[in-house]
Length: 150
Image 1 (cartoon, rainbow, N blue to C red):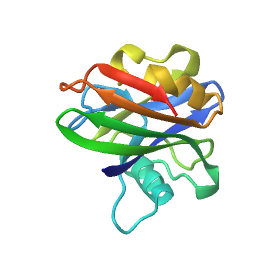
Image 2: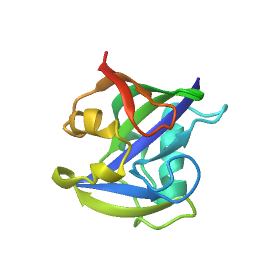
Image 3: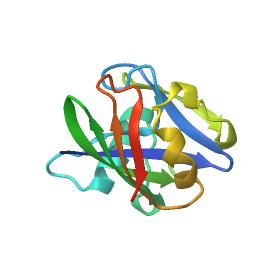
Image 4: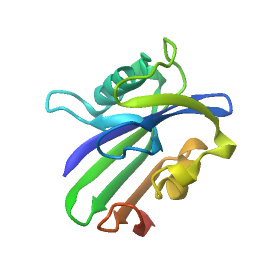
């Protein structure tokens, strides 16, 4: 199982999402994140990924865990994803090779262009709840076959 992070930067009633430009998840709006390296903590990975993908420096004390979700795909390894909310950072969002950042109103997220599972757990996570869930996608990785809060 691969360990991954995702971080959502929030300012007031807005959230910063990134349009994934290449590789896994290309063409979808998402938070900023990726795989945890062998020599780093989950929190350090979240901070590193936000800086690499959006140019923002998030202090450790501005991260709050929002979700703990295991994602599985029919023919791909499972991902144990640790999602975070960030409420403070330094810098201005900038486009990277991997992501194009854009602000959205939290009450008007582009779910039709996000991972299908986001509609099930992200509203609760953004409202301050700690979400724990498991999600299984179909073989194509597009449709949720099963989503369950645990």
